[in-house]
Length: 112
Length: 116
Image (tube, rainbow over all chains, first blue to last red; front, side, top):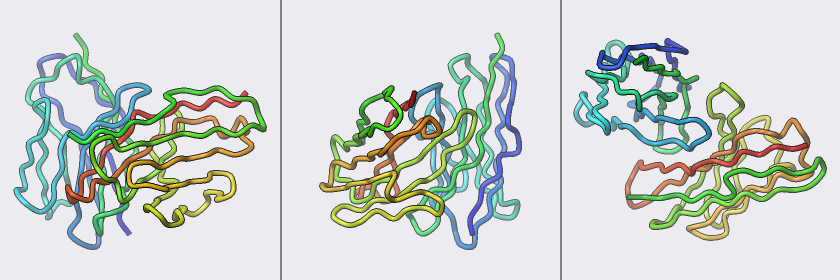
């Protein structure tokens, strides 16, 4: 069965410093992996997705993630945090191209 | 890009009444739609998967008779919470899969349901 572990429930960074949100997955097959962002009381917005093409995936708003099969990781990074990045981030895995399994989420706080 | 419209964005209802939430794909045909529930400070939990023209597939522990899902067309799915109780208060989010875009999933903006 597939599962996702987001290693940090909360991450706090200063504006202008790098962001690292960690995600490990468990999957029997070659998974598809996603990062979504959710602002309070809003739906989810796709940041980026990995679907067995390039292992370094670039997304919107300067975010990127690297798929590392040997480490079963898909960490999300951004070189320089902006205040508007404060939100909750979900790492998501999908097998068989259908059902999505969500991680518990990481709340990112950006300090000015 | 793909857009999913979810209505209403929030609703307050009395205990014992039913509430219908709509999820529409505006610019694509959604062969599959998903309904999620999100409790405060928790992740999204899949409730059910609906395919156009067929019965929804419910996840374990989700009451089929309480959460009625209809996916009558390629652009519309509805979730009806029947005989709502305060414990049904939650944030409900739909997602649609665009069959022409492979693995693309687009999420609605969510519905905050409060049962009083």
